[in-house]
Image (cartoon, rainbow, N blue to C red; front, side, top):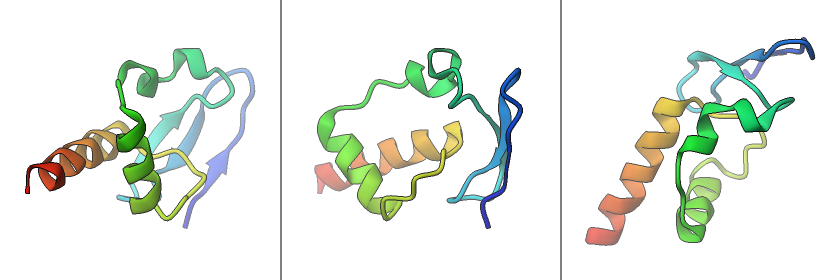
Length: 77
């Protein structure tokens, strides 16, 4: 189950809905979030949304990288 502790002065701790790992979510300061470092194509974004069943919560960097890799593998088939 997703749990979010909001502290607007800092980043929130969130549980990744995919793996359950706790990570820092910086949705209140997206320009500081690690995920902005990941370049995604429009097709990768659509794939990740479908894989996550349009889960609105943040996923951790490991899962984001894993899903990007999974998309690439599926496209190579």
